[in-house]
Image 1 (cartoon, rainbow, N blue to C red):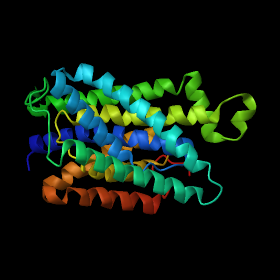
Image 2: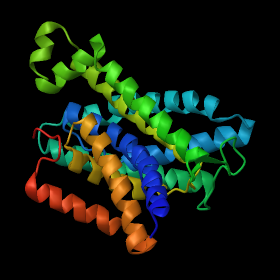
Image 3: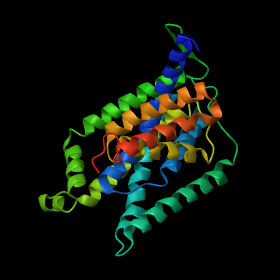
Image 4: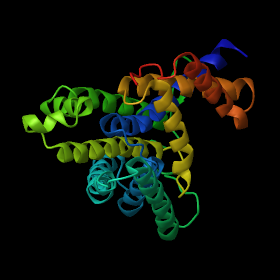
Amino acid sequence: MTPVLLLQVMALGLLTGLVYALVAAGLSLIFGLMDVVNFAHGQFLMLAMYAAFAVHAASGVGVALELPLVVLLLFVLGVATYRGLIARALGVATNRGMVQIFVTFGLGIFLTGAAQFVFGGDFRSIGDGMLANRSLILHGLHLPLAQVAAAVVCLLAFAALALISRTEFGRALAATREDREAVALIGIDRNRIFALGWGLGCAAVGVAGVMLVQFYYVSPNVGADFALIAYVTVALGGFGSLLGALVAGILIGEVEALTALLLEPSLKQVGMFAIYLAVLMLRPRGLFGRL
């Protein structure tokens, strides 16, 4: 192992980790707002990837146009999911937690089957995009341009989420997170905040999906792999913490890359689960969690 090889692996781990972080950010946002775990989160990522692939295949446009279209689509889908399913699940009188679990889990199964029906089971990728098959050479390190662009966009998305938290809507989100019953007394529509929160969480995973499909394949089952990583990232960083999702995503990306180097690629997730268990044994609420 040479220093150059080690730096190369760590650089790729950082790029991958930033994408993991943004995938987890939407999940963490929804949980922090409503205490609801979205078990269809991976399927929303899969839909974003397919949407970007379909837009590219139909028009040949670049990621600059794919990104706003898909993000808007995922935002609308997130709001519609809350209005049509989650609000009803949370309105039941008994077993509310189990109902929302089964609703989101069932939605995930439905979306996977729908994607299988529409697109088939073949693996697809954008092989002729403006970012495909290009590398950025930086001090001897070869960085795939598509992954560099994905990392930059993910950082910008986190910056946008930080800016949103400073707006009136962001303060309403924070207030609803702290006491969802009391906010009604000051004129905040809780259901509206929940719906917009779901839209924002799905929009975040939409950004990740568009950038991910530029260098990764998409299939009906691709969401399951990234959903597992997202759940671990959220738990490791702390439920409801966007900063925790960012730090934990980078940490998991680095650990996964180093594990693949030291052991073998097929065992790359061993390191991820090892660090996850080690942290939770010492700090059960995660790195930045308050629960």
